Length: 507
Ligand code: GLA
Image (tube, rainbow, N blue to C red; front, side, top):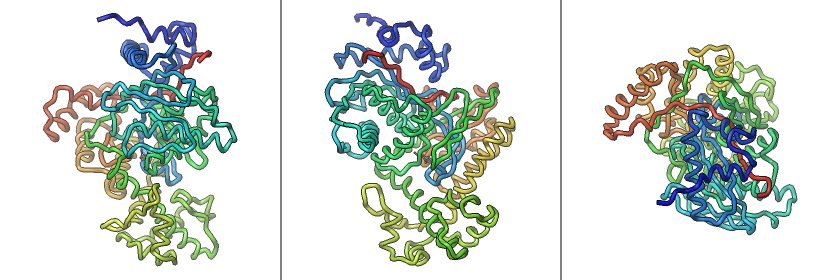
């Protein structure tokens, strides 16, 4: 076997004319993303391998580097698309790439995982998607989003050129850690960098980019909020980030040094594809219906048009009604029994067809049918409003060093996700119970739900013992798994910095 030269070093030298750590840009790129220097060998061999794969396939004279982190949400689930805050952190697991701009308008992506085979498409006004679930759609989503954005800015898109990129992800896929949004963000940065655009180089530009990519990701068919793209771009090492929406803004909060955030994969797949899409999309639809019903009720009561389009609009400032009063009226108005579409249409004073048309549309224009167990407006409303409140309380608790208070909020959030929003599953519930028994102060599902991961707050000195207990209790006893490398399903995460590219001046 021939020995490959140190391709990573070559790339770094070509990029910045310096060895690693000798240049601020390079150190920042790595230090923001990884646990250096402890991690350097792993990081170096990973990029080295990517560079090797890349140069085997492409004839690039030199390569640039890029990374976009995944995330765990500490608290604030399904609040983002309702206009209420979330509180995630970017993690030291990411989608990374080595890439090179092309002279033509072709985009070619390959992946170090053989199940994700090569994809290639042209930059054109309207890029047709691959079939649902195809990994190439996340790249297409970003490119289409940027093309639309620059078209609105009257930028001549004929000039845009493509790129070729080799991608490697170490974020567990379909585990609720936003590997897909990380791929969207990464593709966007590569596109911007290949075209020497500067959107990602300032804090305001990043917020704008996060906003546009949140919209762009709907290309793959989900109606997610904006959390995942925002945290991937706005993460800060050692910090969780509170994100507010409409308009998008962030506030960082330091994480306690003596505690670790441990992620455990339930191994139940939370893929945002095909049938999973409808489970996820039902929640935003129910929330929109609840907001429409409440708008009607408030407007009638106050005899004026009350401006509510999202549940998060039910705020004192907006309605000029005291918060406790809003809560009282809304609670009295919504009943716990599920609603039929007919009942909702009756309240709104319009036909069922019109109601479905206005509130129950999927992205492809098809109508989401009435669920067999009805629309649960009261439960969804209660979860969303209380969960938004828990985010604010969590930020205050962390700022005051009240770790137990924060952990308690995490536990209440899980109960609400399970009972009111119904996005948990028996495996996630058991994993949370076992985690608490194993010594976590707080534990909850994280992300979209229906599988995926839990996040637990654990005293740093107890992390090893904690993980061992969960491996035995959950993976071995409960799931009956016997494989040796169960340890890779549970790991502590560092809070990492936001996505970045390291591109050479002459590329
Ligand atoms: C998914 C979406 C996010 C958010 C979470 C739930 O990850 O992409 O925008 O809605 O679910 O909090």
